[in-house]
Length: 102
Image (tube, rainbow, N blue to C red; front, side):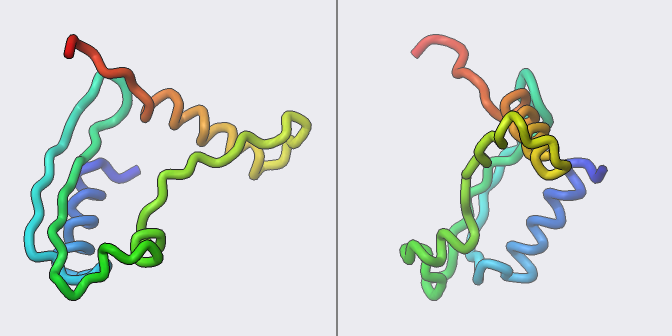
């Protein structure tokens, strides 16, 4: 499996050189390592005025944060087992609490 650095560099090339979502005029990012789960990046891209970032259809084409529904417990197909494993992976590595006092 490629490491985050390789994947992230390829993602940046897609965004900044290949313009896969349109022309980017500025970017800021941070790579974080949290208590559980792999490192991950937070990115802020400023898009050229020609990119329709306020159009919901454009946003939906590129972004979603949907977690699949858990398959029926009686479904033991490969797809159902893969979906259960994916949901378990997300629950173990991508959900976290905020620590500290506010």
